[in-house]
Length: 235
Figure 1 (tube, rainbow, N blue to C red):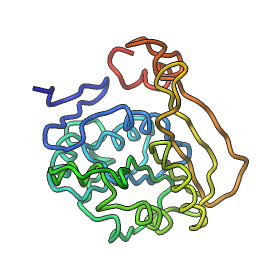
Figure 2: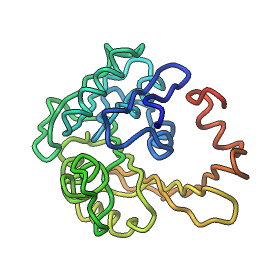
Figure 3: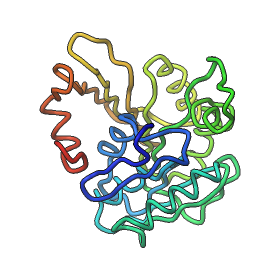
Figure 4: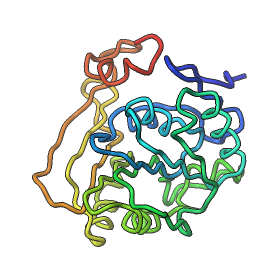
């Protein structure tokens, strides 16, 4: 049986109630999202609350809303956050992002969204909602970002590289400019499988970078260690 929790340096994530467990994608986004000048942060599809907790650890006083549609995940995220040092700065909200109307605009919106567009659906409804775009399409996600992001805010998202052109095209149609791409390379010589895209309403010179995760099996690159050392116990 898989371990029902994952322990980080400053908090523990229980994920036994959630379809999607702690994974590298969430850690990469939580560790790299641009938090400078981010006083109000929205995590769309928070799941276990992992990314919201990482962003709380990386900021001094940011107020974070963690949005989630799945009831079991909401319960688990609330439990994880309540046990953390930042329970007073994170609020978990059960809501469909399609219907969410914020009281304030956000300086930073992050999402590790469902991304399987055409692949076979899982017979497990909770896992399907977490992994597929059935409940939150790219169009709906981007419409929500436009509705909730401040004029100078940033939107950071992690996706499979094969949907990059589709997602960037949809974002451009909505007036969101791609400012930065971080390609995630799992091992030397391998093609990037994931990308972290950083958007805003302000056009700028596109910055591109590559992050190598492992030099060999369980031998992590200096860049990956530097990015995640404040979180992983053994880094």
